[in-house]
Image (cartoon, rainbow, N blue to C red; front, side, top):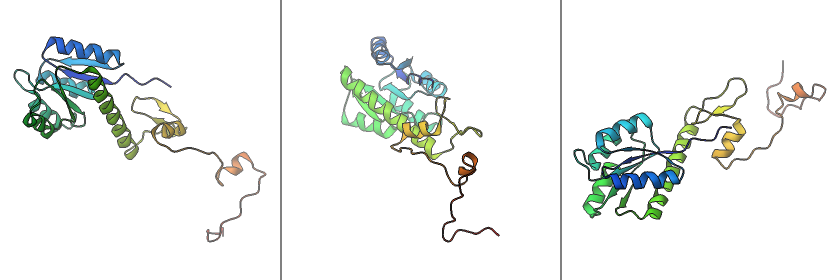
Amino acid sequence: MESPKHPLILVVEDTPWDRELLTTVLEREGYEVVSAIDGARAKDLAASRNPVLILLDVLMPGMDGIEVCRGLKADALTRGIPVIFLSGQSTSEQVLAGFEAGAADYVTKPFRLLELLARVHVHVELHRVRNEIRVLRGILPTCANCKKIRDEHGTWNAIESYITQRSEAEFSHGLCPDCIPLFFPDYPSPAPRAGSPQPI
């Protein structure tokens, strides 16, 4: 089975030093990183690249982070992507405005890298779990012949493997009454259960 792609994170930061720091630290943790220096580019990248998480600076020239976040949450293509705000200011009014705009979390500058990475890991994992729940609730692409299931990475998996990886279900194997004659034609057919329809 193919290994899943590295989760993609969008960093939106107009300060070169902070942008480079975040990129370096996240790539060392195994993430793929794409960056933008302004809100317009951030919205374009979010829609075209579909990152699993956006780290968004609040104070930027032109369109600030609050406005960018509102735009992301108003767009059907990007509203499901979690946003962590980055800011050197942490007044209660600004934090509240960020959450009201749709942010999932808030990190202050200068960065405490261990705290930042912990928050990133949590939101990446939550995003993954939500996507899996949506897939399990929705339509699963299934091979009409072998019944393998195509996952979110385009890999085809045996149904037992797919469900075991995404739930606490365990499998035991047997043969249903309809399949027993295919493998054991001499085996007597099971007696019909009480109340089941009888052949005419």
